[in-house]
Length: 94
Image 1 (cartoon, helix red, strand yellow):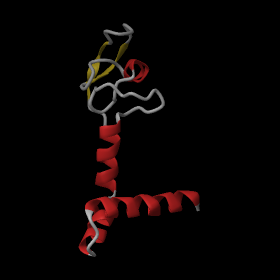
Image 2 (tube, one colour):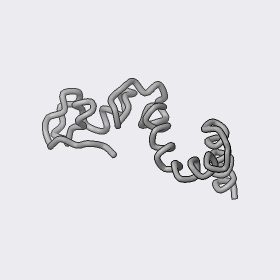
Image 3 (cartoon, one colour):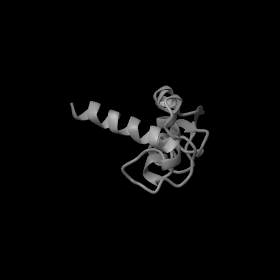
């Protein structure tokens, strides 16, 4: 979730916008800068609004129960994560 401070003048574009706590800029300037909307680090991908680390953390949080279930069945963390990715992919393709 994006943390918002308050409406203020964006130092990048000069518009009166709500600034992100992670970057100090408005959402549009943060997206255009290539910075992650969640943590403010360099994103590395202009097509993504969040960096790889933040996307990975969110994916792990969303799929924690499924991963834990497979690990309780004896799978390693890596194997359990791969199994969940395969299941998620199959659901998207269906």
